[in-house]
Image (cartoon, rainbow, N blue to C red; front, side, top):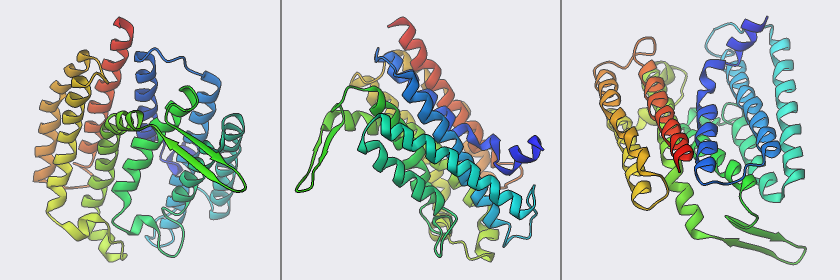
Length: 300
């Protein structure tokens, strides 16, 4: 029963949200920012449960068309989706209650995009937007929310909503640092989606799923490589401008292993044998960066 559930929600794919959260928490520790653990844990539980929900919805709907069987009867599988969605929404609303309307609005956007990724007349998964949206939500919004609920009020923005007016004040520098910080999780997460779509291109065309590789063809491979290189550039830039410690530069040595995996993927794009290379690169880059930032926090 448990194994069937874990397969249904594809528990092995949850490294993206987990690693991004760990990376962000390590960054807060490095910056000596006091962490509000209650708020952080509520968010992490809501995030994780909703991550499970979106995968379950994706599998529930996809099995209608691809002829594959679910791990449960469809009625049971649907109940599981409702339970996961209800729990994640309850935790998200509780977090918004404890914080402010910014978390409510951003959380609402996350829930809508997660649900309509597969569901609806024109699902996001059937459009050339999957890489951008997965990178944005996992790579930028997760760090933003974790930082927002732990930073002093007004660090990123101030939103004042009244009956007569809506006032929004943005602090530019914190957002620039957030974007730089988010490049690594954005690119590595987007590349998992990109590698998946490259490997599934022929099957996707048969079911009229026109993902990014359908439109740009062979250029997908060069985009795949370029996104990894961008993570190393971002690390160097952040060290130069004092966002990260020079210790983080040690993570640059992973480029040798990452390049080896890129070369293998260029030679063959197969779901069974080379898709795993995108997962390995994700763990290499994100894991090493997280460790280096955590070490920086210990010695700072």
